[in-house]
Each structure stands twice: as C-alpha cells, then as structure tokens.
Length: 79
Image 1 (cartoon, helix red, strand yellow):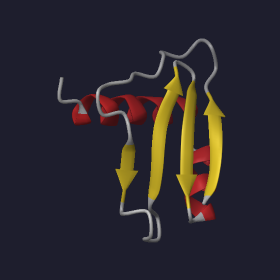
Image 2: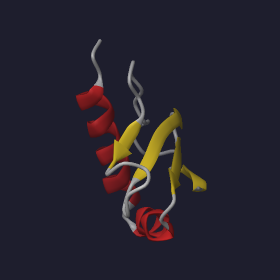
Image 3: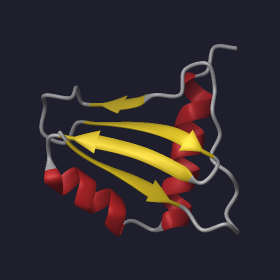
C-alpha cells in the first residue's frame, strides 16, 4: 500500500477521534478504496493501493478534507 501522513495547518479546527476512528471506503482491494485515520489533532494517516486516491486527497482543499474527516469520524462513533 501507498501511505502518507497529511499535516493540517495549526489554525484549522483539530481533527476529532472517537471509539471508531478508522475511515474506510470501497474496500481496500477495490479501485478508489482507502483507509484514513486521524493520528493527532493536526495529522491524518491515509493508505491506499491506488495512487490516484492519495494524489486526489492531497490535491483537495485542506479545510474540506478536515471537515470530511471530522464528519466521518462523528458519524461512525458509537459512544
């Protein structure tokens, strides 16, 4: 897998965590599939077999990416 750690600027809202912080899409073996995990208030771990996914995330607006990560983290929380 290809993986990267994305660091958000300090003036952004911090990334949230929960009892289920792992974000998965499309299955890891599928095209477009990836795994993301907030590993700190400003850092996001992302892994994928598809380099286009990694490059697409890095090309997206940081505020939009941070908001989407926080939304997914909150929606998947149980407690």
